[in-house]
Amino acid sequence: MSDKSSLDGLDARMLAVLQKDASLSVADLAERVASSPATCWRRLRALEADGVIGPPRRLVDPAAVGRGMDAFVQVRMKSQDAASRASFARAMEAESTIVEVYAISGDWDYLLHLLVRDIADLDDILMRRVLEQDCVAGTSTIFALRRVKHTAVVPV
Image 1 (tube, rainbow, N blue to C red):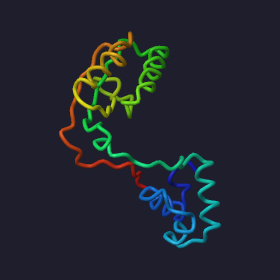
Image 2: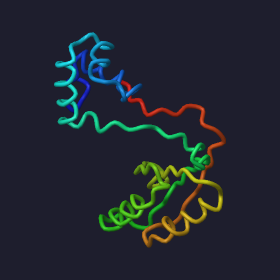
Image 3: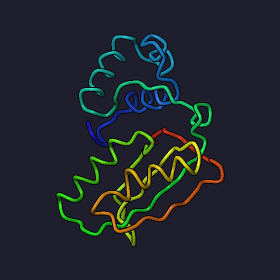
Image 4: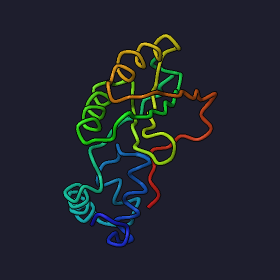
């Protein structure tokens, strides 16, 4: 059930509703998708078992917790060997301020999304976590002026 073609209409409706409000009870979910609670419960367990959905999470407003600056850091690697990639991935995973890491195509090798307090915070993370990696050749940073659209909802 790992691709959209294997999702039926009920699964898709359930996913759409849950992405907007993961706190719904199974009974409330069943009511919203026009199904029975028992069916919804079985479908939820199947979607979890198949890796389609993970555990429910609550989204936090970064600015409300002092992390109001979004920075995007492009990273160029010196080497693309397996050991360098694995070492880099481990280092990025260890830094909680780095909330997303993408291997990308083009002139740069990785794109990092950081939620930082201020420029000093960004400088510390770049120097301490990113540029200290032997495999990193250089970085370029882009600052978001404001969030125009931000969503965690996946179209189904």
